[in-house]
Image (cartoon, rainbow, N blue to C red; front, top):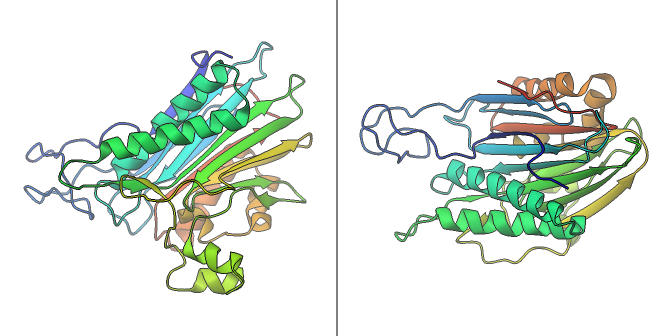
Length: 313
């Protein structure tokens, strides 16, 4: 499999632009230049239609900047209009860390590239997913500085390998933190990832039910993340595989979306009734209409698929 042949798109994989007032590259958590106080360049919204993947990331209504990042690649197959695979990485910068957008940007680019290289070497999908996760973690640690600055982020990726006939697919996901992957269908929709969060730990230990845990004050406290200050190894469930011969839509998203639509069945109402790109836009608009308190990132991969158009904006 050739990782070069195909179409790619990314948002946040490059360092943030320098301050237009003084040229500094350091910004405070609200997006203002640490040197002169000028509001930094915005990274408000990005859309990409790759045909086999549809990406949207939006700053939301309350955050001063977009600290989410997303990258995707569609690998062309031997048969026209039938991609061999689609690879996506989505990361949410941890706002309480310094330069979270640098962490998320480094992670999606490194994770995507490593997954593609591993696929080209014809490694099993689970090993490809772990290669991406390992590379993303190393990239985020490298963003840190000797003075103790430790940017951090969540990570979720997906490798969708399409069958030769174009009807089915094998979906392999990897995650650290609380960015999620869902498999959406008119029936039997499901979440594929398990959050690395205090809320999930409370549910797993039988202390609270899921609804109560998510309503609690520590619902979004992470137990694992990518960053130089992360002390925990991957969880046993960090890689999951789904084999499907039925039509459906894979969704990767940050908590800026699932805060408002945590259940797979509620999410599937959008993808069941709309084509992929309008569905992605409708999901983002729903989150904005519900408050838009966080950055919002949505990536959709339909099965069966079609080839890339390469449209971005």
